[in-house]
Picture 1: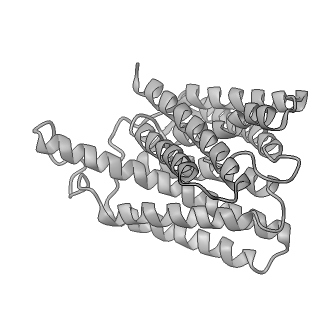
Picture 2: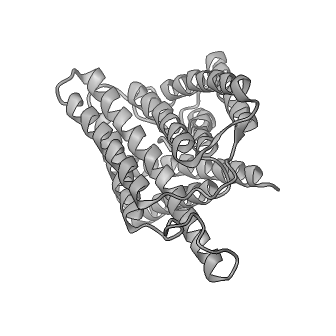
Amino acid sequence: MGSLGWAAGLSVLSAAAYAAAAVAQERLAEHGHRGWSGWAVSLLLTGAGVALHVVALNFGTVAVVQALGTLTLLFALPIHVVRYRSRVTPAAWRDAALTVVGLALVLALSVDSGDPALLTERAVRVLSSITAGVVFLCAAGAWRSGPRMRAVLLAGASGVAFGIASVLSKAVLAAFTAGAGAAAGFGGGAGGGGAGRVSVMAGGMVVAFAASGYLLGQLSYRGAGLAAPLATVSVANPLVAAVAGMVFFGEGVRFGAVGAAGAGLAALVMAAGVIGLARRSVDPSGEAVTAAA
């Protein structure tokens, strides 16, 4: 199985783990967050989802891995059927089909640069500064907005933070792999100028952006329902990551301008499906069935 196959397989397993973790968290909430076994299962599944996601980034482009992360919303359909004894409506099947078709086109058109996804310290600082600025502006604007716009801005900030955390995770993993290969005699100074060394700053920013993304995501769910923020973070996350991957890692698409147009169409189709799935991933009582990856 090629690198794309590994990336797709690991990403699907990651999305399934996130969906299972959401079920465990929901059951834990039903029992008043009591019981060590419930917490252990929830944390274990979440940790497995994170680990599988990070490893997948080592095999595929950021655009592919982040896009496949939206499958967590697709897994919400059978969860909804089982948990709430409902049926999958034709509209939900349509949204699922749009998501799958969009993902298939992204997988078919995406192409790696062929070079290690390494970032210099300067690139890490630039990317981190831009991200922190965007997150701060969105968060600051949220506090001066109405409930719905506040939820969308906070969710957008969360999606940006999560997307860039994945980009930096790929860079850290690539630097670690390049450094291990050089130490074993399989390469020499990949990237040049110390670019093959694991960046402490990049690792720290991964933790900071992941934590802030989680916190902002939780805040976005307060006071304006869950559908709008869940849809916003589910679209913003892969979109931001894909753009960063193109700019900093040289990721692109096949077939030149035609491929770029096709990728844009695929993104719109997938976004339409994801937004629809996000709206349907909220149960009748207004609680989220699943969490965004």
